Length: 289
Image (cartoon, rainbow, N blue to C red; front, side, top):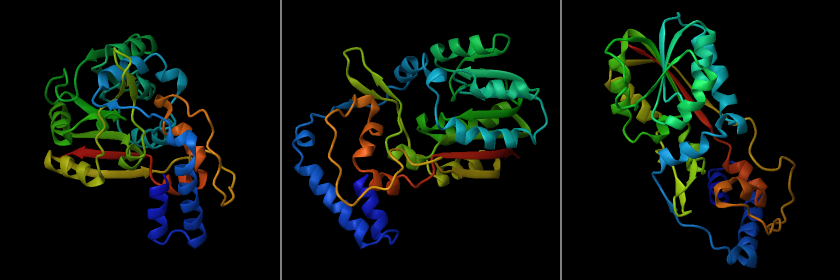
């Protein structure tokens, strides 16, 4: 956070007083014995299925602040589209599928996590919910009018392969709606976490797709762009009150590693506000040519 904040200052967004305060914080943090002797963790990457298996039990209960950012825009777009057959690709617990059903669509949900689908079946007992992967949807060619995919493509390494599959199942003229974790938010540590069988720290696979990555994948597979929105956070995480330039003292309890970086942000609140002033979610509306 300090480094990102200082880069923003170097680009001209903040003044000398801000820079001086950030450097004082960095020195204080480096000199603090509590921080200096904190062991940290070694984290394995790529544990996407484990992360969602463990997250499934609390996914709906605990909530997700990104829902508040993507749902108003997705609802606005969906309300302009005719009803038809819609597939919620990577449907999870059925968050977007339920919104499609409320608007009169015939909905098919697909997800590769049987645990997440189990919760979706409780929410949507009469909806067709299928086990399947984004790279091989269990649907016929030219079968659906609308594909929605919420907060999932950050886990896909190759966007063009996924877009090719979306194009295969869509009818000509069909619509594709995507919301995803913005690459700037992923860079700041918004990655699902998991605990491995030996208690080891794990992360889901996370790919920081840029706007250009989505454009190249969409245009290469026959889509045209109808709309793109980059949604900022409601408010930066951490304390909202203005802090003095004096570096705050680190608290002794940093929380468990699964809560990082969120539990660490109030150590450097001004740096956090500066570093976090970026979009959190990106939303796309494509149409198949």
